[in-house]
Length: 313
Image (cartoon, rainbow, N blue to C red):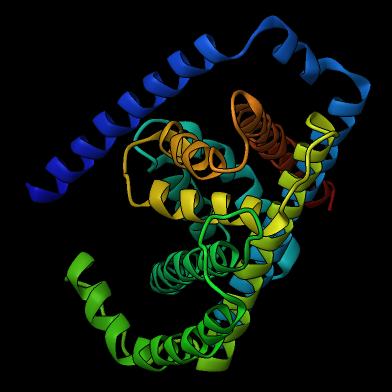
């Protein structure tokens, strides 16, 4: 009951945030602002950022492969990339469950048992959240455009603190993960099939790399749309990482739509006045939609040709 109320609250909050963002965008962006998206320079930047964004799928698939292999379930990175690429597009459905249902169905059809699937996807979710919080915090503390105003000495202290917390989380994960999974799946057993801490660290590094690459894509968008402004990579990557973290915790909003835009805009508004921050946020949303579409098309092509090769043999 509480879970349903929480999900309903998240969906309502996501819809309200999306409405607020759309209304604000309509009132703020002028015809001249919108025309900037259709210049050759801007379109090149958006396509380049989308290409960077697609790297998330093979990188995440590699991390998934490492965790599956660690618990005795061997599959190729190409096969796992295909599964993730096809089901990624379903995150735009309301409720945010279509992606997970589709991924589970495709995984089981390719001989990934339910227990390894649940355990690795659960680990992936927690590690992705941890990576987002970590990259977002580092970006906020080391941004040069005033997101967090600390001296270099106080900023430097952040690194060992984050490292200590990171190793604490990885150390506590093996004893805590089965209990957490038992809460969601009371009839399943998850003992003795956990990825090793080194594998979890490798996966965490992969998910952190995803945020870093996406941050580069946002920098490309900002540079092409606003060539006369000074841009801070750390601020841009922090805005996305923290917005993604918050959007994930708001269930029901399709792909975090509305929630992430509002948070990104709030963070960027400190350094991008007027319509500048909004241009970046809208440009990035267009980039993610394009990137997810490209991932789906490539992955579906892989599935089509693999089925064709199987049929011909």
